Image (tube, rainbow, N blue to C red):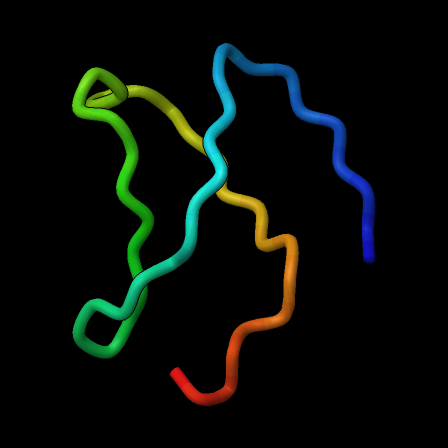
Length: 48
């Protein structure tokens, strides 16, 4: 696993949920319009 150092304002733990042919992560509405970064920290579940 690689290690990343990112400076930011807040951090959330979540799970990428199925969305059509893709996946999505829900963040708070107040984050709308903000720049965000998403880091995958585990291998995807092949059953999903």
